[in-house]
Length: 352
Ligand SMILES: [Zn+2]
Ligand SMILES: [Zn+2]
Image (cartoon, protein in one colour):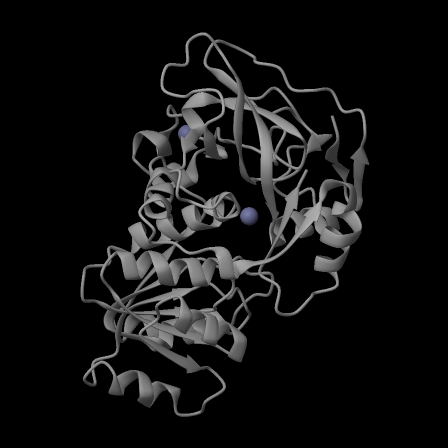
């Protein structure tokens, strides 16, 4: 089959004759890929990696290391099933839950799967979805409803990241919540929060992102370049401030801003991955008794929650799909263009 294979730093290759995947056991499935999204993490691995990519030693679950097929935001349809699989049928459209937890380590046993020390993630630690076909355990394939457009399902991995962060925040219906940074994860977080009954304020410096946030259900949008923003945020919350602020921008200054935008005694959830070291006066946390919580990847149940919202019509990923390219052109039209820092682009999907 054709596959985009990660060999190492700045070394990705479109292979024309990569071996077709086979069932490893009776609980496996092989899917035909419909769409796989390219995300910033893929570009980072290519330019600066291997970071998450399995290298140096094999993954305990998959027994593999690079070279590996890239791609972790995957949707497809079932082509082949192991004899032990009862709850899926050939032809079912599914989302790949790309994170397999070990369910044995200290963190898994404490319900903190984000910290799992033995996890296997498709596209990083086992072959992923930038290919024509893929093998994966059937227990980690989740069916999508007939009414859901297939492309939307390719955005379930970032939606899972949003669901995980929202769950960690402990949000309650009616809470005033702000999301700082309206990229893909931020705009999906806005929608997950709306589904949870929160009143959502979207914050960004880009007007197009704020327009999209409004379209996707944000109650209020503010431009962070507006010098009066703190007062505006107090105005819409009866002078109290926002109960919870999500930081999904990942900038050098944005964690400090997110903490400042959080009300006294409120919670800041850090979802961004920070390449620059932010400066912070910790008295901002101490004197206001704010809580600051980190959130990464997912725990068991988060992908199921994401697909449930998709099937219920609570997530609209369509406006976040900027373009669909073919696997033949994935390097030039996907990776290379995203590496040039294309503005106004959310997700590029690859259709084999
Ligand atoms: Zn991703
Ligand atoms: Zn574990």
